[in-house]
Each structure stands twice: as structure tokens, then as C-alpha cells.
Image (cartoon, rainbow, N blue to C red; front, side, top):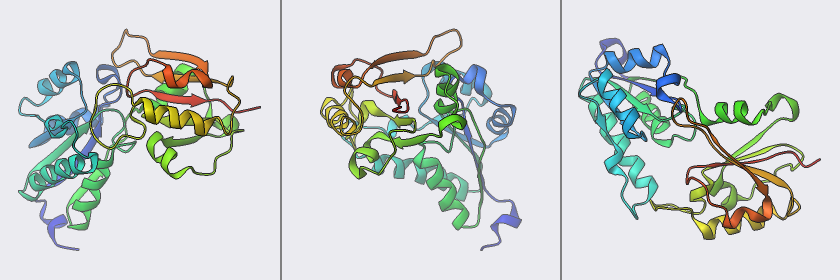
Length: 247
């Protein structure tokens, strides 16, 4: 361990903006944004970006790293390097991301691990994730039957052993099977996912495609349907699939 932790030179605080920034941003995360020397943010819409700019006028978006056809891993690595370089330059850095900073947020974990290994202060501040919104909107209590959660592409590639008698949540189903940026739902991957799920559930098993409301006053998108309808369903790209327990 280096002596940087005692020197106070450079640090990273990673915060989540929640799903609805105007309602979900915690006081701790707000303070981290306002007090930082440098603020980076990613995955926000124009409304959230404007709100961040009001808290820290010099905040910088990292969304430009997303390029059509670019491997997602390369995109994340580039983001992490920019954040880490700023910390190494002696800045108190805040990295703000959509939702919870530790849930399906590869760059945030990578940045914290890298900087911690180099001897810098780096931490994640809890936030509200889409999981929390799903539990509330669908009336799901993971304490009843438990819960299984996977990122959809990794679930399809690894085909883990799972229990259909326990509720299943699959994240990012609109981009299942994709490793690079693209627009619209990945139909081929979605069809493969449906085929795999059909090995464990009957075709009429009712699933729900869920997308949390992104702003106060809006309603979340909740689309119940039989599993067999999934490949042709129309829904927001970053939606979540919820499959209740097979009784």
C-alpha cells in the first residue's frame, strides 16, 4: 500500500442518481457531486444531465465513449481510465451513474478496484436501483420465495442451473446476445433466450416485461404476456424480464 491514502491526494466517490434523479438522489450523493473537484457522469437523459449541471456546472459526460459497433468492454475501459487519470492528477472526483452505482455498473466497480489497488481512496455510495422499483411496482417480496437475478446475455451464454420454482429476474433483455452498441431490440438474442426459458417453463407461463419510470409523474411500463409472445414483443430496450415462480 502506498502513502497516498494519508496524503489526501486524489480520491473517487461513485454515486448513483437513482432511476428518477429528482426523487431518488440521496443527500449523500448530492453532496458528493457538489463538493467534488471533477464530476463525470454517464447513462443519463437530458433532464438528469441538466440537473447534474446545476449541482456542478463543470460536470463532464462520458456518454461519448459509446460508439456504434464498439465492444462494450473497450468502452468501459476508456471510461475507467479517464476517471482514474483525474484521480491520479490529485482531484477529488465524483463519478455519477444511473440507478445504483454497484448494480450492473461494470465501470464503477473497475474504477474502485483499480484505484484502491493503487492506494487511493475510492468508494461506492448506495442508491436506488431498478430492482427496488421493480419490487415496488410489481408487488414482489424476495423474502417470500427468494429471487434469482442475472444479466440476460450472461444468463444465455452460461446457462446456469436455476430453479423455476423461484422468481427469476433477467436484466437488459433488449440487448441480449449483443456485445456492442446498437439500436432497437436484439431479436435474434431474444428468440434464443425464449427458447432456453421454454425448456423450463410452459409457453403460456405469464412473464412481465418491466421498465421503471424515469421521471416523477410518469408511469412504469408493465407488460404481462405469455412466454411464447416474448420474441415479437415491443418494449424499451433496457427493460427487465420478471418470471414468477412456477407453482
